[in-house]
Amino acid sequence: MPGGSPVPSPATLLPLAATATDDAAESVTNAASFIEENWATWLSIGLRILLIIVIAAALRSVVRKALTKLISRMNTSAEAVEGTALGGLLVNAERRRQRSEAIGSVLRSVASFLILGTAALMVLAALKIDLAPLLASAGVAGVAIGFGARNLVTDFLSGVFMIMEDQYGVGDKIDAGVASGEVIEVGLRVTKLRGDNGEIWYVRNGEIKRIGNLSQGWATAGVAVQVKPTENLARLREVLQEVADAFAKESPWDERLWGPVEVLGLDEVLLASMTVKVSAKTMPGQQFAVERELRWRIKEAFDAAGIRIVGGLQAADEEAAPADPAASVAAPSVLANPASPQSLATTPIPPPAAPPVTK
Image (cartoon, rainbow, N blue to C red; front, side):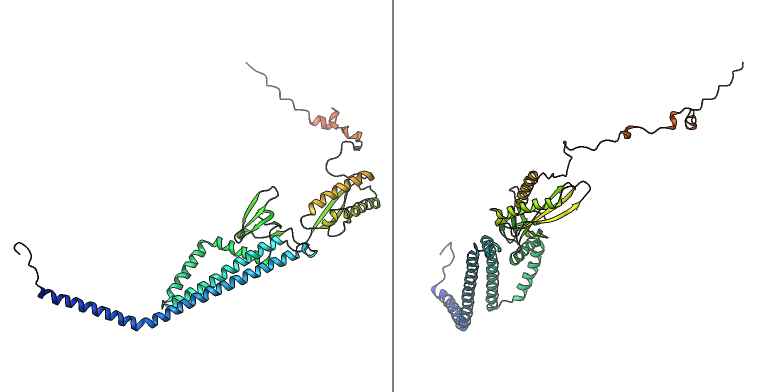
């Protein structure tokens, strides 16, 4: 064509089309032969990976269901014990429920991590992936994360051991050092306390160095009363024993006491007073109410018996000891006599006379 590129003839295009067709056929043939050679290997690897995933999922499901059933059985046994005579000596059902659920959550998480982690490593091994660099990188990353989040790891591990060892639970009154109060929630990282004034404390488990549990076992209520040393000891013991016997028989104090109210006797003897001590073993957390009620009853009984309680500031109506009249008289002084050597020694020395003036 004039002014344009020449058009190739069909004879020229036929060899090029044949070459392209031959290349495509060769590629298809090579791909088919590659698939034919490796399909058995791929199928074996796929079936192995599928089998690993199925076994891991089934094993995880079975373990989690077994742990859930175990926790449910623990809660059922706790509810059966609650309300019986033995239940008063044990922890309450809510505490056991939260503790068992926390333990179950930890066990389920650990089981899932182990099963799924092992399955993932087996899948990578089936794919012919070298695990040595991966494990080395994971180890280095774990060390770095451990150093960066060491406080979080410390809190978590401390919470796990506290729950496992049953150091405290919901409803217990504890002294954790940094705070004290009633436990309202126990977590793997934080323990929640309610203080005496209603405030809520969030205490990290890793910060708790010591724990004083005031709700386990029993408590002691002690009352010390100071009276005059001239009081009759036999009469004093008789009045206190009457108060103790009547107190132990009345409701609701008979349920809060875990033993008789004992008059221990003289705890301290001084010149102006002597101290009599009364003690009783009570339910956990009830010792303060028992002490207040005992003080109230002892004060009423002493007033009725004419026994005076002493201590603190002196009462205004008490008779003071007569003052010594000689205490206000000063001792005679030798300085009162101007002719005494002491008075003469304290006489000031007159200044020397001035010399005469000459013209």
